[in-house]
Length: 248
Image (cartoon, rainbow, N blue to C red; front, top):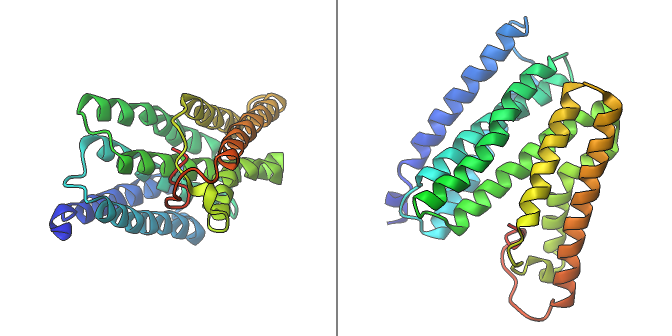
């Protein structure tokens, strides 16, 4: 039964991979490279393979009967994140125009509002969909913070790594894995990270980019800090869940 439920997922992921490869090839041509550096391809394809495995695992564990329209939108965002990841990886060995990164990140950020809207309209809101959306956001922020850190300093990586540090800590502190109450402020803070990092990528007014990224980091520290304090106070109240699943 579990196999039947996810039988169309591998096809979807294959299509996503083909789209990502096509986009990366287009970037290579328009950036006057005959081919992107190997590190770019490894980063993009590695993201697609690992994310696909994790999605399939999540679908089986959730017992989801169908992928759903909202998850298709999120999968489209994930494909764009794969391309961004490849370009960011390539930028560490060869110059890649920032315009390519911005052109891909802007629709990715806009689609972040679309998948939630589709989920509500189609009455397909699910725990799996929320986790899928959250993880795509997290990796996009990691890729962008890596790109911006080349110019602003390694401190910017704190934005991209904070979510993963929280998940990692949950393996050793079970109370960090407990379910958190929904807070819309988390979504606002996540959006602020994306906007600040995207502006920084453009290279326009670097001093303002530094200020915006610093403010975004401060908001992120506040958001995670509030959640950690909430969990610490109630660490004996409920059973732990999967690492990182509580902070949606």
